Length: 596
Image 1 (tube, rainbow, N blue to C red):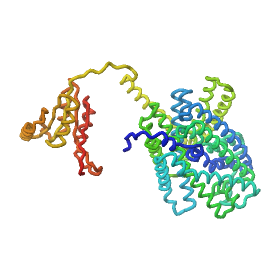
Image 2: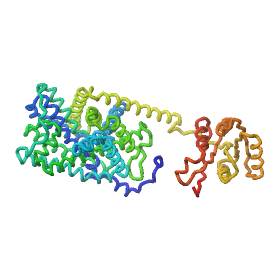
Image 3: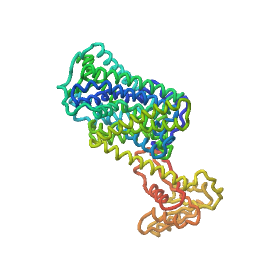
Image 4: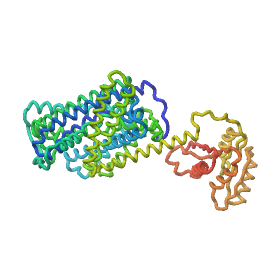
């Protein structure tokens, strides 16, 4: 059952279920690696506003993004070393920058992870529809179907999800590297695809345009924080394996980003109607034969599976929030396989709601994308600057300058992206992030109030034995009543059976039968002229406020779940009302049927 805590997983088996370095690259990095399918194109779409000649700036802008990538990779290696329990920017903010900033980091990461799933699946569904136009009316169905598959795989186990994703990741990386190598060797494009170039000069090349292109291209950096968030998912030594995975991700992503930008700059590649920039580069390298179509299918698969990064990172983040009392504690529970299944289900549910809300249209999601992760980048960099200044380890100044530079660059990208995309939907993120922060704060306030009420950590007066009363509601003389009374006698020395009747004659007859049976338990009969059973018992319990009362509610439990709807609901209603309206200890005694 969903709420049941699973048995402890054997240590060796649990360790096998965790990720190695290459498994972590597959399970947690496909989002970042697949972003080269739209990151360079985002740069081109901004620069082309100044005309085709402005496209020569694609490589310098990509170079600046690659420098930022290197800074972030080094930074997140430091985050992993300083906070090996995961959490990324949230863990850094909590320890270095205080509560409110940590709430900001957590809220922004939650938004980014959910959007990653929605964007990846909607983009993958759109790519499939582009190859098979007959599916154009089923875009949402395809996206939700992919979401269901990813959810099932991750509930099965994160190690299994890494094995599933290993081949698509390797195929996509090999494809991009082959496009770059073949394109550079050819010297000129082998073929051109798409409609007429979309290049209408609407503004001059200037600092603001370059800044917009840099900010848009930084969408290629989304996902690189997932490894630092999910360090506990790695095998021992966890921190070292996670750092190795981060380095591999940075090297691959930087190589692919710069290689594609070099081809775009050399070939003066402008956006064309009906095709992506990556499709143009693929046609330029391989022509328009079977290899071209196979490459597009691999890209589609990689984009769809990129959503798995969120399934590896967000449940771990939610578990840390739950341990800090900022989310319900159930998010910290693991299943038999070491996965946080409640976090996985919550992520899937939020992504499904978002996909349905926008009808799986990627264009409606893009303006919301990347802002959250840039906030996380900025918070983590700023937190590390404070970490180095406070502790002053060897070469702390070098680390502080490096992280400070990264904080300025990512903060600039976040502000520019927010201002340029605000009216296109980015205002939604501006609204949701503070609401999430408020939610985390209110939940934390509730848990703190509970701790104060329970005086957690204080030594309470020793308990003393008191004469308690055990009340057993009964409706007849049968095996259920006999076993319930036997159980009640083990709970206390004084047991009272309570029966409710709407007819005095029936009540007298029941008392006579009870006396003949002689169970050794006193019977109280209550009159109920309005034909109700539950409220008279609740009233009877309320009248005994002068002593500790326990109520044992008998109920029949069928062996097969499909018969549970056929059982009398009054025991459940009675137990619920007693807990809500009295201070009694309420227990249920299930009589398990053997035949039904």
